Length: 491
Image (cartoon, rainbow, N blue to C red; front, side, top):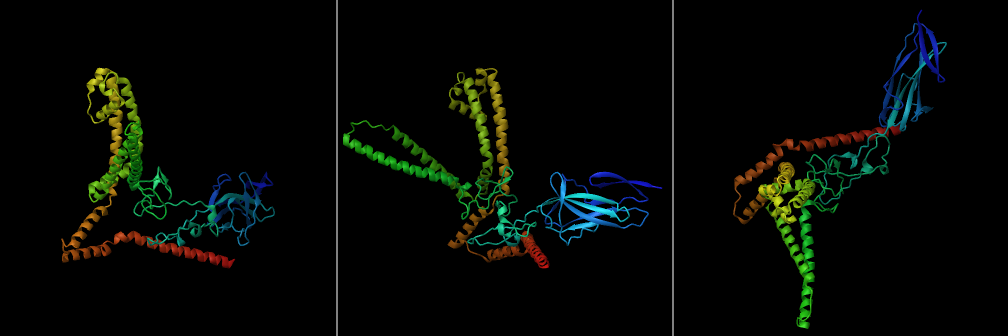
């Protein structure tokens, strides 16, 4: 005779029972690997099913009953039983929970299997489930269309508060969310970012490799773009020069009137006037400088000059911190050479002369004999330290920055800037009659248009894919709305 030992829980006490010729049912719930501290997570918008595997071995023919119980849990215990919708059958071996049935929280799902005998032996198994929010489907426009066409003079309204979808709730509550908008130019594969963080619309931070959609544009944000810095310098210097010139003119009138009244027998202090006149000269110099620099824009049709301009734009963000670091290192060596050799070498007699000597060393134009004669140890040591840190390290970093940004500028160079000049030249020649239009030119233009429309379908592949996704998205949204309507009608 086989005696099987079985353990059951009754009123939180462990009781030993012995059943002859039968095993107690073994119940395994799928999914089963869960605890109160580590429950299985299901989004609220998702249907899920708890399946039970019941192993029942007995020589006697006994029936069994199953009963599901769901308890609400806190962080330490599960006690309160919840009432389910009557449409949910809790007496089957598996439990099906439709979407949006349970509120957010952690629950204990328990299945009790009872053997219908004289003793009614039962076995229970538990699994822990946590209902979590679903991911929000953010739609900027109605139906979540991925591509729209908008006129240049038309306003564009992006309203995610009305068109977004919360799969866990019947209605999207727009007031519960914070909104940040990001934009990238079509053709660039990355959004504007700074040190790995995306730059939202309205942030004045500039990413030269991935410019914002609204840079150099008006109608939404008034921003100072990279290309307008020269204009700002010209405006500031020019208007300041005008103000100083007007002040100087009135001073000249006042001094002339004073000389006329006193016949030159009065003392006049011209020191401040001379200082202001020097400032005017400096401002005029900077105005001419910025104006001449802006003239480079007129030569953008040359490819090499375009690459040079674009390289400086790309390297700007890297050159600013590099310049700060290089300035600190250079000032450190300037202080070192001046304090050590100011009384021994004529080229280090002043800070300006010392700075000039260090720049000559950078250009590899130096006289090492003076440093050796000044100090047999400190001279070569300081010189070698300067060569290693400034020439080998700093200059190598500078060349690496310029090479990397030159490569980016060459890869992203806009060929239309060169084509614009050739197009304008061709139109001017035809307009003035210097160059006649021939039949070959007409056929060539027609062939170009035909090839662009028919012989290169791969260029329109991305547009066709967007149209396909747009159609699928509209079909899915319409079916989802139809299902929701049918559910409401059924209820």
